[in-house]
Every structure is written in C-alpha cells, then in structure tokens.
Image (tube, rainbow over the protein chains, first blue to last red):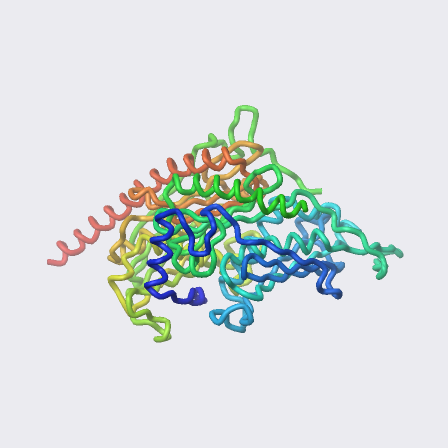
Length: 269
Length: 246
C-alpha cells in the first residue's frame, strides 16, 4: 500500500518568500506565472535504443528511450500494435527517491504519460500490426528522471514524445509465419497527433505553470493537462492532497492551453 | 472482428435506455460491517463496492507516523471475480494508481491534524465492476469515514462523466467506459464547492470539459443527498439500538 515517498521539506522562510512573491505576481526565478522554464532537447543520444531523448526543463533532466520489438497483440486489439510506457524514479534524480520496486509515484507518472500519448493517438498502433492477431510491433517507452528539479510530468512527456518522434522501427520480411527483422533497415514509427503535457500548480489561490521543485513543495495541489494538436484535452490528472475550485479548473485549463503553444512551437523547430 | 455496440440510439438514448444526464439507479448504506470502525456499501447500476475504515489507530510500522497529523492510507482493490476475466489478486498498476488518487480525493476532507501520530486506513473492495468503481469507492469511503466518527470538512461525492459517440453522458456503465471516447471521473466536496479528484482519459474539447464538469456537479449533488440520507438512517438505527438496550 506504498504511501507516496516523502515530498521533501522546505524551510518556512522559503515557503513564505515564494508565497509573498507570488502575491505580487512574481516568481523566485523571475518567470511569469504562465511561463515555462527554458527547454532543451537532445535526441539520439543512446545508439542502442531505437529512439532516445534527453530533455532539460530548467534544471530538471529526464531521459526517455524507445525500444521496439515484435510481440503478440492484446486479445481485445488483435490488429493493433502495443504501446508500453514505464517510468522509474531512480535515486540519481533525487535524495527522496529510493531504489526498489516501483511505487505509486512511478506508476502514476507512467500511466499519465501513457494515457496522454494513447488518447492523442500519438503512436498509430493500427499501423503496427505485422500479422494481425499474431505478430505486432511493441513499442516500449521507458522514462528515467535524472535530476528532479520540479515538474517531472511535463519533462517526461516531452522526452517520451521526442524519443518517439526521432525513433524508428525496422522493415521485416515474412517467411510463412516467421517474421524476420531486417536489422540495418530503419523506418519511422507511424505517428498521429502529438500530445503536449502542461502542469499547473495551485499555491494558495494562485495558479502557476511548470512549477519548479520548491514551488512543487509549496503547492497545495497540481493538475496536468495533456493537449493534442487540435487543442483538445486528451488526459487530465489532478494530483496531491489539495482541492480546486470549479473556476480554478477552468482557469488552469486556459493557462495550460496557452502554455502548450510554447512547447508545440518548440517541437516544430 | 469485434462487435461494436451502438451506444446512442436515434432517440438520443443510451445503451441501457438512459438519457445522457441520467444516472443509474444507486443506493448507499452506512455501517454495514461489524468489525470496521466505519463502513459503507454502494451499488450503482451493476457496480458494487464495500468500504471499511479503521482508525485513527496506532501506526504500524511506527516510522510512517507523522508528528503533526494522521496519515491516511488507502487501498482500492478489485476482487478477482469482479470482472469478466479473472483478475489476478496481486495489485495491478491501475489499482496502485487509483489507490493514490482516491487517497488524495479524500485527504482534503479529513481533519487529519486532529489525530497526530496515528493512521486512518481505508479499504475499498470492488465486489463487481461495471463502470464507475473509483467514484463509487470515493463516495462510499467518505460515508464510511463519517460512520467511523472521523471529523470531516465535508463528504466527498464522486461521479464520472464521459463521452460516447460525441455525446457527453453522466455515470458511464462498463460498456460505455470500454467503447466510449472519453471518461472523466470527478470528486467534489459539494458544500465547499471544491474538486478533490479530476482525471480524464480520451478526447474532450475545451468546451466539453467545462460542460462535463457542470454535468458532473449536478449528479454529484444527488449523490451527496443520498450519502447524507444513508448516514441519517444509520444514526437512527444506532439510536434505536441504544434506547433498546436500556
């Protein structure tokens, strides 16, 4: 029944400084309330992976890798490929992470990213069947935070998307029921709408985009929106033990839609 | 090939004959278990959930206790035979995630600071699953917490809104959940107007999200009334037991 690992502690003086700055509409790191930290993405850094990306969101660093292999489809979707997203909060990323079997935070992170990608139709699973009902491509997306300085969800989402965008599968040849992968062939993973993840933290009655680590510690609650390329919402997850007023949800959604543009324009470039 | 059912008919009615904003028949009962400090049962359509609450009680293991407030632990689990294909009894990733979001949906309602160094345990068991098990678990859990005499800021009531064939509908059943285009569970402390759980899976436009939240809110008020009635019935029972014992 693993409780969430401790979220860490923040001194009262820092907490109060963050809150009093926010009341003036300012953030400790000088950003606007609706502003992301600087984003940097490096792709293809792991040669053995079929796709990889290192995302830096301010000081937060997340690496994601894609592996593709041939497997069997799920019985209820015999003509579709399989997407498996996993995340592990490894201790290199923070003293509050412990080695061991995945806890609820690892699982929640993976499942939120998985839902965002899936609902958006990011990986065209229907184009990944090789022999329907028998052999399909399985795309594993594995996410590892390397430095947890706040907002792992958005960084993980961007890492997963970037690794897949630059990733590849292989050509195959069929001999009877045998599927042989042609190792030196490469073809892009069939992709649809690209999802963008935007997390909003609620501190007191203020809403801020892309909370850094200290802001996350002060936050009462956070909410993540995954947004597809038609500005539709394809996943939501409220997290932490706080609550949102009705209007705050609507306001957070507006903020998220607006902030998503920045990540989307970044992805285009 | 898979058979895809028609989820909305020509008259705009759903697969089980409901209108889009109509909930399934439901009932809530408080105090259904002898051993638990608080308990509740909820049935909504084909979904059946039972919740037991223990505590505030001594923390085991001791080191999880907090000096300034009680620790809420929550476990959502599905009985192996609650679904069509037998579910393995070991906790699935889904159950682990839901246990977390259910805990976070209940936590804002509880005066945890009243009971430092203790734990409050909430066990939600899904006896039968037909859509809306997490929302039924939250609804029943908050009644069970009240039944345990744990001071609450408000009850937490929950319902899911979804989208089937382009229509927003309240309280998805299992088939609608499986074949629909979207599912958005919402939990609220109705009197305080605070949303304590919000998830969404599937595609919702910005306007659909706003409208869906309003639809959820209306249904949640109905659930809230039923929660209060269940607790009042339970208090009358207790009053009778007490006066009968004299």
